[in-house]
Length: 413
Image 1 (cartoon, rainbow, N blue to C red):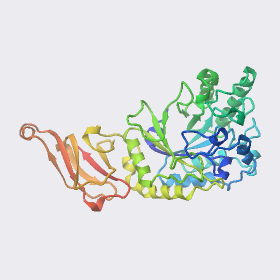
Image 2 (image 1 turned 45 degrees about the vertical axis):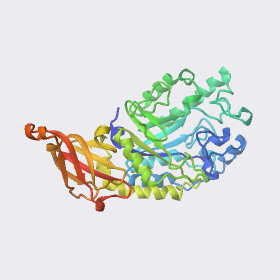
Image 3 (image 1 turned 120 degrees about the vertical axis):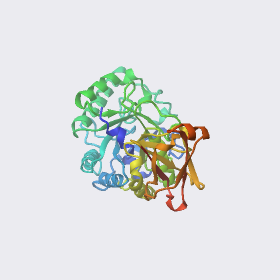
Image 4 (image 1 turned 60 degrees about the vertical axis):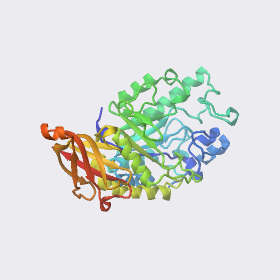
């Protein structure tokens, strides 16, 4: 499998659909909301779907998101080609519930794919296995409330066979209409079992067309990487993984949700995730016009200079020291260990349990300032050991501190 995912460390998730023009959360309002989305709306299903025909964003909106993503150092991007509401952002031959039959008529997925390739960003598409609009799923209607993992409404076997044929056909379109994809991000899997989804057959279909594409674990029983949300886990999952994180409390554009995380909080989430060997997939939620909300633009633009300064500690890095050795995240590339200072130090910071005589130099990464440092070892080690293990104390002057997070590079022989 390709190694680009292991080196990327930072990506952009885009949740977008026709409902974004109303400023409502994506999909969940039509089923009455979700306890996991405290600011989600609750609207009749028919009212929710009404805006599909009037969807008319600015042309080439995906390019504007991806240009900003690239400037911020995001190495891959994932677009919701189809969310749980069933609205397709490409010209699907399987349904007229798509952007092709909206006021816009353009192919959003194609615009996204072409822009990603031109900007050298690895591209992924998100596809919901569940479809709350399709008649044979069956479609969710108000009588099905309250929502309960899709178990209240069950299709007949004939309906389910038709739905699977439809679902497989749409996945096949995404695999064959747009050239090589780098990633397929499935969602909505909780409503049925692996056997009901025919996950093995779907996996075989994907591999027959695109053997190198990465698949997340939400295709039940399969997956090349796992996803956690909405924060970095205390302990890293086994294998490849990512944290997907919304900037506020919503995934789609929600004009009533102003609970935005600060740029510092987002940078700290990146540092913590990368220090555990994962990637941060930071979510953005364009408005119906295709423009990003001003609050999201501000935060990404504040991250840009930080990434420019500290990229060496992020891309291609791996976990650094043990938790007891330094009070904060650490990463490593070759013979350099990067100390991520997420809080302002007093006069100094300390690294414990290292071979102190092997330290060549210590510098603040953004400014390049060489930092004063000294070692502490036991008297016995100083007298009898040419390669003692001890503490490294690093002086950190106020002038080198970054307002978001400071990173110190410790270079070893």
